[in-house]
Length: 318
Image (cartoon, rainbow, N blue to C red; front, side):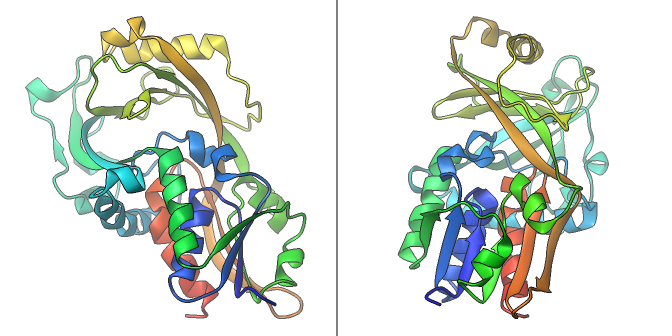
């Protein structure tokens, strides 16, 4: 064996986990059937915000462990792809958000004049917002500096990785369920539209805007990301024109200028959902330690460092 650990999957969860292990001195190799740019992580909105992930208590802990790390990365956005951006989450007060809200520095309820039109309450916060293609590139470079490598290699069975290293970490997103024989893993389809930014500088989100779908506007260096949808058990990655039009219309109720903005791209991502995020360890036949780190739903960026640290403790037998 030439590697101490094989991490399966090159999305934000896999790369962050690989970085943590490599920076602890392990020889780490990431095995992935697709490049980081082809993963769901690459088209994610990138805002730190616990969304569609359970159990609430564990997700809160992982999210709050990730928050200061991502905020630290925001000191060098050109390198890391992470910025700190002010914004508003509509339709909720702080005590309605969940157990994580009290741990977010500066998060507060909006004053009446700050509350978006059409909503009776909202919260403001300054949060990490990642340009995901840039952030994934940063994680790969950081992994390389720590001696880790990425290999394009489809994994059909976790036992294949176990024959190459004594530690295997299953971070394969939707594929993690198949590899683990876990039928509970399923996609929650998210569609978004990227438009030329008409002057939006703050992020906006609402979990439920009356249509059954979330709505969000996320200013990125490459354009304004508009979303979205949350359709469970939908596997089709083809953008639907009628959904794109509905997304633009919903976002225009918050910022009317988006109706005139030139459309730059359409994207679809399949969030890897499970009733509970799975971060746990077991032994494979032959003695290799297998750590599962999957099922993060729409909170992959948000819990990335917290889950990576927890997975590393399990991998090292702590």
